[in-house]
Length: 341
Ligand SMILES: Cc1cc2nc3c(=O)[nH]c(=O)nc-3n(C[C@H](O)[C@H](O)[C@H](O)COP(=O)(O)OP(=O)(O)OC[C@H]3O[C@@H](n4cnc5c(N)ncnc54)[C@H](O)[C@@H]3O)c2cc1C
Image 1 (spheres, rainbow, N blue to C red):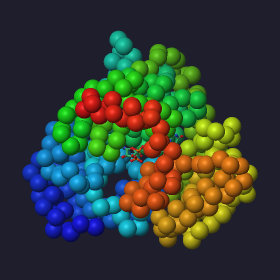
Image 2 (cartoon, helix red, strand yellow):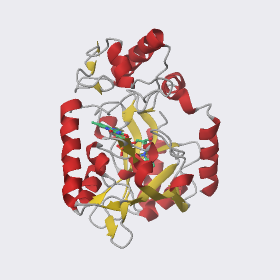
Image 3 (cartoon, rainbow, N blue to C red):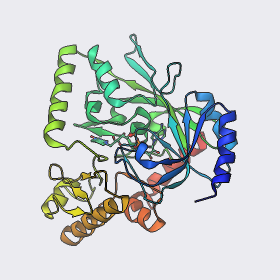
């Protein structure tokens, strides 16, 4: 970790642009795993102007990342030596809680901090269809765009129209069309240096009854099939080279219920890892290694992580997130998006 003095200087600069800065924030406050070491500096932002100005407070060598609801992130026990940007809902802001519905075009314009279940329910309540799948995904709209979150046969790419994205280094704000965001299965060309501040979703007019029925069916299915408590949803992406889901591969390898420390491969859904108040990030990673190695040895299928790992060694990060590093399509999409910003 860099010295606290250095981060305190950055915090002073952040205060001058009107955002709130907090030093050494426990990762447990920022993610749904509720564990991990300290994050050097957390910047809570309530206005787009603050996102735009943030770059002037940072030097190029400082790591920066946006954290939404932290429902897809694991932070190491050593913490994250960088800046975590959080879009904070406040009464008067357009970043955390704005949802506007345009009747003429059936378009939903929402700020990046809005929670997906809120968005799905608001849309369904007036019979606008297309976002029902999102009711069980406990993330923010910004995180969902970045991850191309999805489920129940649909995903963000299915409804997204465009997103407003800020380059956190140079402060450029650009409205980016969906096709330029490089959306792929559970990922996109959006990098850590980019912050989605709002997005528009194109829905279709349907019936309130049908939308509500679908919402209820999805909520029921989730209760039946997924565990609650401390987790970050599916740990591994479904591998492209297998007809089986990551959960099925882990299950068939007999790993359901395997424990490391107090972390456990969920009995209810084998692609979830459950934590409790004693679990460390190292326990979670140990189980990820067990699952990755066992499935590889058994089936020849390499599984990569869906969850973002922050603050880990390059070896661990590459081991789990290496799949896209050598993919020219991903590199091209990232270069194209970068050139727009
Ligand atoms: C119980 C449970 C069930 C889940 N089910 C599903 C599911 O069915 N389908 C699915 O796809 N996912 C699922 N997830 C995972 C997770 O909810 C999604 O990936 C969600 O979209 C993440 O949103 P978030 O705001 O929590 O993002 P975070 O976890 O905070 O961040 C995820 C990534 O997005 C980036 N990010 C966050 N906000 C922004 C922003 N505004 N601008 C730019 N980058 C940003 C972060 O830097 C990070 O790289 C589940 C998780 C849980 C805990």
